[in-house]
Image (cartoon, rainbow, N blue to C red; front, side, top):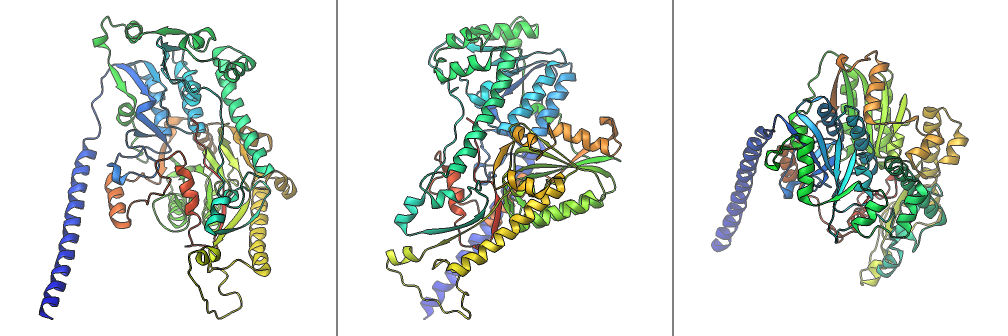
Length: 594
């Protein structure tokens, strides 16, 4: 017994020591990163070439501090510097007026940004050229997104060597279906929805896409490619027909093919490129070329967001819409407090709601919408759409006074679904017997251990139908449309921003910059000198990221992590039984342009 007591005491002491060491290490990390953050602003040349190397930055909604890989925010590539789109655009505007910046060297290869992000970044570079300073693009491995960005330049140069990885073959979308696999495992996914285009959950109940889902995907891909092609062909002065023939014939095999087709201006070696850059920079020796890394320039000229007497707030609604008060995604309770604080702040004269969200929880979306409605009763509220503003993202924003969208935004998806898996066949398959004792006839309906009966299915369907009707009426009221018209263009269908404009789901194709200027104008602030921009929520610091990680644990990898199907792992997580009765207003997929 004495030996047992000694062993127990040793184990307890060991656990206490481990916890003490854990917190010592935590504070050591915090101290070192605080020191790094304090010296994070790098010295940059007073004069030189602004080097916009897209392989070194990741365009996000807000600029965030870097973190060590183990503590990195979801979706952040730790090899890249995270740069907020608004900060990137402002830096380009600053560079246009900065006598120290002679021109921009655009290296678009390896771009990491969404379709709408590319559109806004390209527009900012186009405005930069109006200053009289050139944009020079150099591409070694042109792809869909990188070449689209490159075509904003005055000149596009390409190396005269073969063996490049040329991936300009058009846009495509892949859909994965898991029904056959789930059948083998005995998993039955019960999908209850309204909207013939509401394909969220189809991957779990079908072996191929529904005709409606395939139709909407084809239309979206066609529209996105048409938007890309229109900008490319206009910039390079060739017809869309000629360009598409080059793509369809796989005619862009060698650098000479790009030159002959008029897609680049000149083929040159690295030495020739340096000589060209020297000439433009008016220096004789390449050793005198001073490149200013774009991420460093952004940080050096970043608006600190200090409030003035009159402010325009930008509320960034970025990520999935979820319940709770957490820092990841758009957590309802946290955002309601932010919105209320903005509403009560007398220095804030107008608000822009920047939406980059595929949606999420219906109840969370409604909490946020209600808070925004109160805000709108006191201050101008304008919406700006990023890569996504769909389903729940559209729910919270459709009532704004004006809605700006990029042409390549994915929006709409006005539909509702609930998805409840049940594992009765799975347990039998593995020899597990389940017995349930309940107080009422349907008390075990959400146990996940049996399928719904007809009455239970009707019960769930009634909830989905009621929420869909509410969604349609909210949109009809916010967009001044008849509910019958909204129902026609809803049904869960996802629209590209340029198509959404034609059916009155958005008001104007424009950037976040356009939305800020318009919102300020509604408040009587007609000059940029009349106001300052303040952003909400504040991006997490490295220290906060570390505290969150130690407190909550890092994001669990899935079996598909690190593969081309990594995003599917998140969809599989939605089968989690923690909230089986939750009803969702969410877009059915995420889009990546390569």
